[in-house]
Image (cartoon, rainbow, N blue to C red; front, side):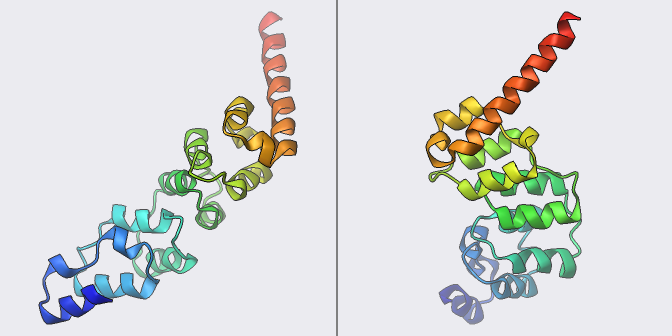
Amino acid sequence: MFLRYLYDMKPTREYLPTVDELRDLPVEYVEWVHGQDANHLSTTDLIALCASRRASFDIHEWVYDSMHVKFKYSEMANEAAKVGNVVALKWIIERDPLAFPSKRYILTGLKGMHRDIELLTWVYNSGLAHLPNWESLEMLGYHLEAPEIVQELKMYQEEQRQRVRSTETQ
């Protein structure tokens, strides 16, 4: 890594990699940066690295075990959903089942540049109540990629609406 070489030549903070540069690198580089300047990466930066779609599972374990960072799991789950990082979501929910991401962040992740079938399937398997409305999924083209999920969600949400209407009229 060229920045590491520059840092060795002149050890100043300006030559340490940014969060964006660290997203593609193995956790060993993050550890090295932390060893050079423990204040270079904030807790927010570490959460961003963990939530990154490109992050490996190793970064989660290192931040959790070595750094003793106390995560706000719901915030981290929202960030992971926003970028479609299902590996991070599984890790987060395993530690705190109540930290499920909000529908807004799930929808943002599903709106990504590619149709994120992995994220859609994971949320679907976690429960239909967690998915955004079926109309949004249809507008994004998921009815073509996963028609059975969208159809089941449509039936579920229409049934829920009917239930609400019937309790309102009673």
